[in-house]
Amino acid sequence: MPLTSATAKNHGKFSFDINGLRAWAVVAVILFHFKIPGFTGGFAGVDIFFVISGLLMTKIVIENLEQKKYKNKIYLLCDFYFSRMKRILPTLLALCLSLIVIGWFCLGPVEYITLGKHVTSAVLFFSNIQFQQEAGYFDSTSHEKWLLHTWSLAVEWQFYLVFPLVLLAAWKSRLGRLPITLIIAVTFIASFGASMYYTSVGTYQKLFYFLPTRVWEMLAGSLVFLLGARLQLSSKNNRIIEFTGLFLIILSIFVFDENTAWPGSYAMVPVSGTALVLLAARQDSIFTSNALAQWLGTRSYSLYLWHWPVVVGLYFSRVFRSVGRLGRNQPHNYPGAFLLSFYRAKILQKTLTAFSPTISTTILIIAVSAPVMIGKAVIANEGSPARLPEKYVQILKEAQSMHPRRGECHVGGMMKTPECTYGGDQLGVVVIGDSHAASIMTAVENALPDKRLNVLHWTFSACPTFMGVKQPNTACADFVSWALEKQKALPSNVPVIIMNETSAYVHGFSERAKTDSVL
Image 1 (cartoon, rainbow, N blue to C red):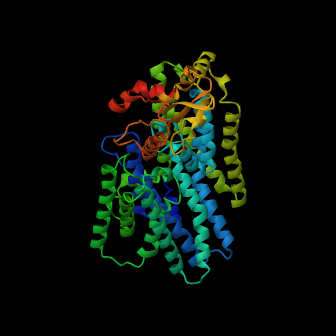
Image 2: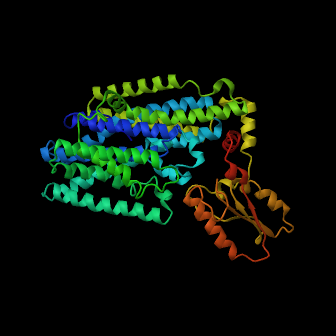
Image 3: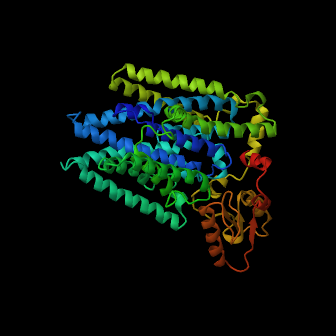
């Protein structure tokens, strides 16, 4: 999550290199999400943000401790947390409220309920956990989630909550930066080791969203701050270090892709690149200090927050046009939504500045409760179907007409197969496959020759049941391997039905196929 440039201003001189790196990061992420050819590894921009965040947060806390600005450490913590809230929440709240308004006119009940859940998790900073339970970051269903990108904000906020407490505890030893540096170094090694381990065993996507396997990236920035001050490098060496770092960042953006195990050893490439650029700390670099990079860097947070809803909105627009639904309610008025969001954020930020920290914190808490309560109301009212044309609601109901246990038994993302059965108490048939296999469960149950028999349900969303081929994600590969071993223990007279949307996996999904999978 890109931090505002004011952070650097408030804690020392303005850092042109940091602000320029934000521009590199946000452009990489945006071009990746818009699927611009060549930028297959643009998701590494988030890793760049993590390193920057770690450096700045360490700098803020350590320098305040060394300068003894606060007689009471509680005041330091309160000021730190309030400052982070004031920087992050106004724009995020404005975005969430804007999406709730847009969703009222554009989304069906099911999609609106999902948005309500995601708004709540986003503003309370546990969206990384929410999305981990649903599906992987690179899964096809990601284009249906308006706030998917807020997972990185949640990770950073969880880091903000814990990290200052660790620094304060270590500072009590009166040994200055040494114990802090040792603690950070050990934690860095442990977190990076965990990322490498889970990558090697093929379960890295289970921890893609989690702080423990991401914290090493932020701590890399912390180590740059703590160790970099000891280095006295010549101007020539700084240029070489910066160039090497930028080369690693560019390499990450153009070489890695969605099939790269992430995070893990590969993530060290953009993290190391970012650390080197920060270590060089060149304030007159043509790469980071030019006018365009500075302009983008100062706006990187807003650009980051709004670009993904634009991607999702364009995707839904294609869906609506292809099936001829909603007509004038297509989500096309994004420029107006942008302006409304920016104005809301600016008004809230100015309001917070005008009052004392205590009053401002109270205002923020009230402001956070608004989207949370609205999200809960959306869920409680089942997506408020009365706001839409009755005919459209009827169509959506038919589209959602499925076995009532589908949500429980058809898994995706990182969920484990519950092995549901339908029918009697004796195993009659096993159905294995993707969502197409899940859709025939009741038909297979009704076709059983004996009421005492049942159907055993083994299906995984968007997972082709192919052996010996590269699977779209490791969770899918784990499921196929598990199913293969599991069926070996079944009685030889029990038939196994395997069903997949095979043509799509071989030839690719058409726009119509993607539309059908959404609706």
